[in-house]
Image 1 (tube, each protein chain N blue to C red):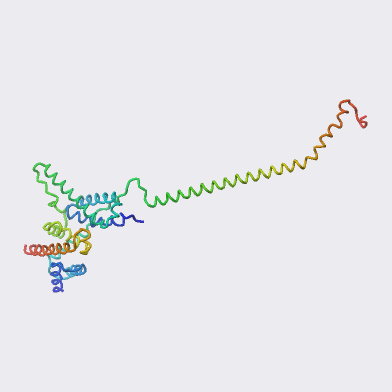
Image 2: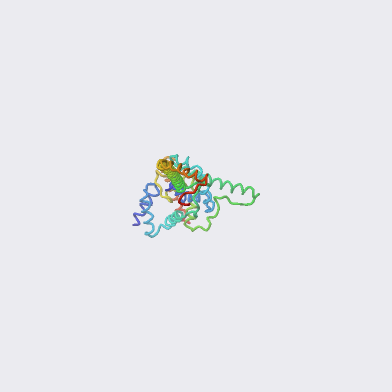
Length: 163
Length: 143
């Protein structure tokens, strides 16, 4: 018999990992961010069970863990006294295939909210309703942001073609 | 097929496609020539979709018993209590049986006493020969 955590939270792991990977661009750090978030969820599992939208809570926690890691990188860059340590957002994509690099180059051009909505739709295959619930925003915001992201994609691919 | 792909792509860029149409668009792009950038981009999305983290253990609270362990503990507790109850009952029954046997023995003893009571008069007969013993009088048969 599965617990609430095993049935509802643990299965989100892959999806959360891909979101963390989008923010951190580093697999090991994305794994750590997700694991830390899952451990937080485990210790708050009773509270989580009472929430209407535990997935939204999980996405927020993974995002916070990812942001914390980005801040740590920035702090190290300052501590390096002038050493030119790149920020996490600019890290190379660990020998990723060119097609994936193209996706990341495009996503980097988008505002954060559009990035998240675009990924949830295009990679995770979620409906507008699900995205609206997961990100705790209105359906209208989902549609508008997705429309803008796709228009940007059209321009991005056009530029890519002309190169 | 190309025309259909173009139409779907236009609809997609306008944010008007359903999830089913988006799947159809990706399948069409695999078949039609051209659309190199779109093909590469959607391939990149598929690559991203296939990325998964390495296996890690499900978090578990230290010292906390799993559900099965809890069930096993409860069953063991009930079995122990049941065994204690049965053991107690059999001891009570043994004590009762012992008391009954003892009562029966005492009854037998009492009745035996009653049976041997008339024989007590015979005890007095041992004094019949006493004068002869005292005065050393020998029986005629012995003479």
